[in-house]
Image (tube, rainbow, N blue to C red):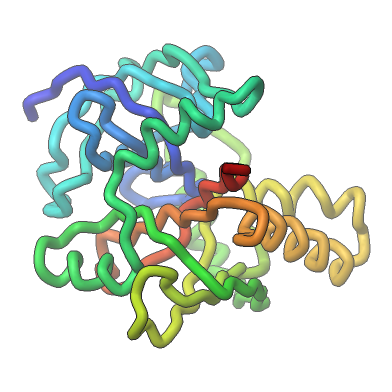
Amino acid sequence: MNFQKKRILITVKAYPNPSKKYGETVCCAGVDLGTGQWIRLYPIPYRNLDDVQKFKKYSIIDADCAQAPDDKRPESYKVRANSIKVVDWISTEKGKWDKRKSIVLQLPVKSLCQVYRDREEKDLSLGLIKPANISFEWVKQSKSDQQAREACYSQLSFFNKRKDAIEEIPFNFYYSFKCAIEDSCQGHKISIIDWEIGQAYRNWRYRYPKEEVLLEKIEQRWLEISDVTKKDVFFYVGNMKRFRNIFMVLGVFYPRKSSS
């Protein structure tokens, strides 16, 4: 593979997922600052990275990347994990939302309807969309095959480190919405796989031991960040290699609306 160093603003980190082929991995995506285009980085053995390499969302990283030979989606790149270097992190303090916006909003803003059309025509698999009429719900999920899950974790992973299995979240979370810039949109309901919503479930249950209260708090938070009356809301969306027609919310971009 032809590896080249790229500088990337990370905008998406999915919740960790066990894989028979790669062990535990995280799918990350962001903006290639050299081209201004979407880029997907997979697999990232995130918990096996050195502490100085563990990037947050809106970190700027340098990494050696090469077009993925086994994934024909044009945004997909393999990354040498040991080449990852965190260069900077763009906070939201002191007006730095503007710095995030100056990079993120250079990406084309689409409807999810258009993202599906792009998938059919060009196999594009990532998008920045503008939603409206947003609602939130959760559904109890059936437990995965525990033996298969444990088999993934029993394998030696990157750098021959072993790790405790990361907890499986027992609920699927969804946004329902219409496309703000597509008059003929009939509406969509897609799952949310952002790292943050999984971590919220894991962390908040100690504060809210009653499950119904915990779920209400998660709903409240994810409706608050997607409140289009107060924020300029965009969803990062992407699909899976095996299921190209299924798109998911990978994260929410929600700067406050301009007062002008």
